[in-house]
Image (tube, rainbow, N blue to C red):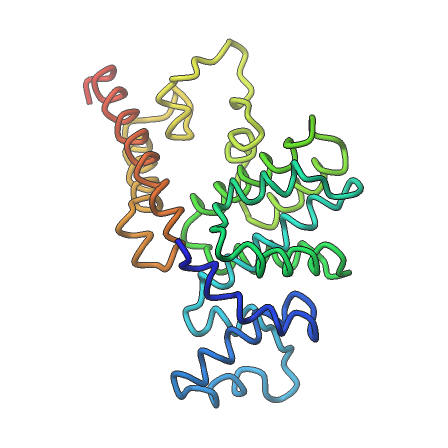
Length: 261
């Protein structure tokens, strides 16, 4: 459980001298020093190129650190966007991202600094999208978790919804992902069955058999636990993916039976 959270606790010291990105810099530099690849950090940023610390972390395969820092910053700024942060919102953050008690103090310091900083949250959303661009399922789950945090102290307000819309766009997710995160089915002229297998696959009933099969294969590729683990997705999300894969397969089996595919 410590996993990706425990690895960034030491990096939060850098946060105090370099903003939220300082934590990523510290984690990336520490990894580079340990691996003997410190010189490789400088090369991509020579000749006046912009220094992007989250990209540096990603260069060394530290997607777990990019994930932990980005979701902490996004959650903190979401909680602050409509006024003072409440205990209900903080508890929702810990619950949805499963912060282990042993990491709570360090993550809390990062959360507080991110809340009070002037850094743009959209930058962090973009970095998370880049780090996990090969798995939209993880990005959608983060969006769902952010919705849960926003609703922890009441209904969504205009500022929270605008924040989430901007994160959704930065993630590069489609309207169906927004609808699922928002908690509503894609708009249709008739009431939607909550167990609709087509909704589970993110397609319409008019979708051809070939397109249905392609959608099923894509979702399986994006959400299979073994594939996620191999790509450095945080362990908690790998665990959740097993349930999602079961739902995807059940939906596909039901469609095949109904259509005789």
